[in-house]
Length: 406
Ligand code: UTP
Image (tube, rainbow, N blue to C red; front, side, top):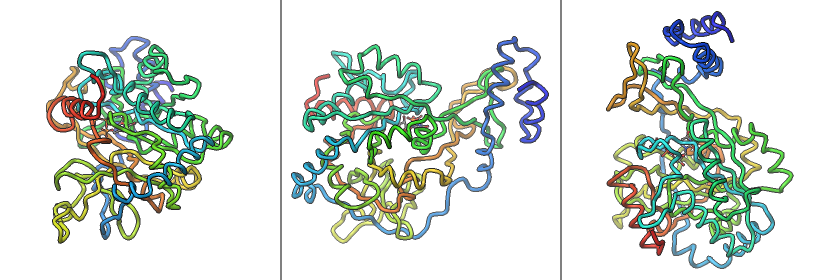
């Protein structure tokens, strides 16, 4: 794309300010900027001013298989799960394309050292969790790792330099998700540098479409992979391809399964699995009406009590039917560093939007979902913040509680 074409495109979307420093740029800078502009997805801007948040339908609580029920049928579920793993029907997908802004490290979140006296990255800890399952099942499985342009090379290099943490490197496949522009609250796309558009990962909702675009559709088919267990990079107690979870979901006949924990308080910042107009849905904590968040049953338990921990098992068959459906775009108000009056500014408070689609919205499209309750002290140690709630400190305490040497 040349300057005239870029200008014409930007005029159409009212974004010509992106070229305001063009004359000052080097040849390389000009090339970089034009290439950024050519790839821009302007459609996300349509979500500004039209509410952003979707209207929530009629809510009702979801049922879940409780820890007690799971324990009662543990052997049966485990056997089914192990058989599925041994026959290669299950693979895992690590969602690691996020920016981890709250943690404040410029490196991929998975490279963060959670150890104290020894080095233990989040990636390594999760791979250790995987190896426990592999030992138990006597079979390993394919692992797809979703990255984004901002952390792809660092992530791949880190796995390689660490010899894939003792896993078979041929079974680990890296692929990239897409980026979306960021903008001011009034919809002007930001420049990150004079020669660079401000871009951020477009949310974890596109994990499957990006996998397909990366050419892995045939691979899934050829390898007989029927289920994908997706999980977040930021839970160091994440149990991946847990045979009991796999067995329970397969036996339920549901198109997907979700691990859930009982919320500790109405205000806990986790999405809640419930039903909306009769269909399984996850309402993010910031979208949950307070009266529902605080509602209690007669025995005092929260009525909407099941928080999701970003560990889902999805049927590939069903994913293939729904992945082209449009997902809602969520507007996240963030403090976005950008160029203002010719200088780089790093605001302390939100100044604009990042645009994201979310995996939680896929659960609704799946049509049926088995919620499987797990013990939070064994399986939920999120690393979102530097200190305080859901932080490196709280995750370290939980790791120690689970016997992990740090
Ligand atoms: P979060 O919603 O916590 O976002 O991601 P984040 O980007 O990691 O962190 P903050 O909000 O900037 O502090 C939950 C999971 O989804 C993945 C993350 O890597 C994490 O595993 N994710 C998030 C993606 O893979 N892509 C995205 O675009 C966003």
